[in-house]
Length: 278
Image 1: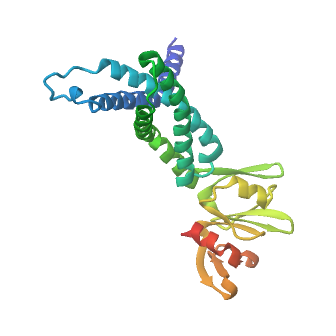
Image 2: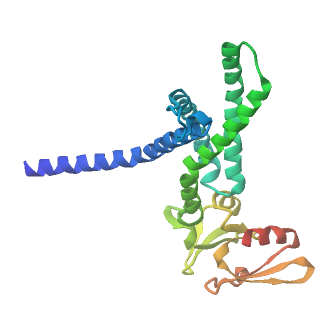
């Protein structure tokens, strides 16, 4: 009897924990939406200022903003999931974030223009393009702020994951090894076999090609120096300028293979390497 009761309590506890962890992010977003709607409607018109003698709660505007915010939230969430799968899991940078924001605002614009046109025709019987444009610009500005508030933490977490805690599965015959990015020094090819060198000097042969690995790893941390090697940023010991605009890169001492402990960067790759390293 006591064992059964304990089991039920454990299951109930796990279920409660799972439910709480899955609901909390949506609860946070709901709180942001409500606060955003309250602030936006109270600053939209002087009659809505709290210190105004004729103040009344902007219920209609508040409800309309909530509905609009939910619609924007759905669009942003679907677009975020797409960008997360295609871009953010590989690399989080200003360009990918800007692509997410611009495309989201573009989808909102596509929906806003016909919807606002229908509302204008139904209510006023005519379309005033000037006010439609002003309304669109204000809506996009508010949506930009709202989306930033909703997804800033998610994007930051993905950035940390992509640059530190992310891992790659190394397949070598029947053996599978998982390594985090921070434990990988480099990948190099020798005699048509690609090896992974860890920070402790251990070498693991892989079933990948360097081209496949270049597509898989995060290029904020890894750089394809030449046809033979992909290096991790933290593995670089020193950089020396040599003849013909080339760079000589010396890797850290635990790289025992003389063929890769010192490598040259061609003048064609020099700028790309320095931009990546700096």
